[in-house]
Length: 385
Image 1 (cartoon, rainbow, N blue to C red):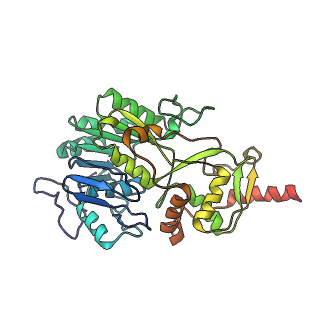
Image 2 (cartoon, rainbow, N blue to C red):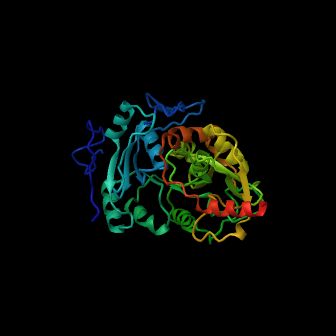
Image 3 (cartoon, one colour):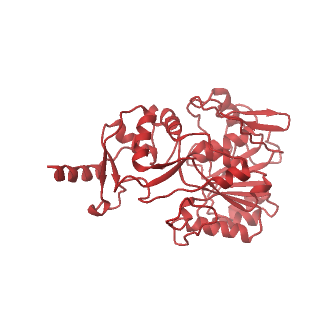
């Protein structure tokens, strides 16, 4: 049975009140890439490296669906720093807060004392409607939604919702010979992300004020998808990097901290009303180039790259490479033009940030598995002999 739970903070949250069932449960320095926000009067600004400013006009009561891993970890900290009341809706299977590498004790204690938690299963639609209606949130950030049916009870519960901000995916676009993908490009109703397309359609049909963010490949510290980690495992082991076909396939990666900033930028932004935005890095990169960039970022020698034809192997259910074997990248011009957002991390710099704060510290999500590599390299040696 879903229920409300409370974190145990070191100090009382300024958002807690006798009438609310929610009780309280940052990133100032993150390897030199500061994520700091100055709260001055009513103007709240985040200035990590450049002059880009994100300003919120008023504090909001925000619910993040998800929020305890990767994107939500960084987003929730920014929103709390902006002065918003932030609640995480999770099943409670993972810790609601965890101190991040490079995060000061003071910043972590401050975040932990202010973050709120609503424990439940989002697929328990009656609980979602009842609990959200009781709280009356102003803004929803849906980070982990996959199907439209999961969003309907949220909208039913909050008829006065000010904004629904959705994490979609650039994977919804129909494969095309004309790249980069723009927000107006044709979408693929049969894609594995069709649920996200249906959610965007639902939001539009319900007449709510919504914004949808479509990232390409996301990377950065705490990444639970084997993107950069896949390369780091092989570089650390001193192994060749297997790359499908020619290796000149072009793709695109965006840093999670840049993505989190984009999510904050659309909050309360009238230009973002009922709009879709592609969010990713400013540079495109080939598969071979990505292997070399990972090596450079982590301080390894330039790797040996072995190309293979996937059609010559039966890998079963295992993936021999973590990316789509095709050109896949999207334009972020619309977000830059309309929102004033721009990525702050270059690819090598961003990969270094990820390595230094995660894999380089001995932490990773999945252990190394070189099964498919050995199949590829074994056949390569036979062909060379």
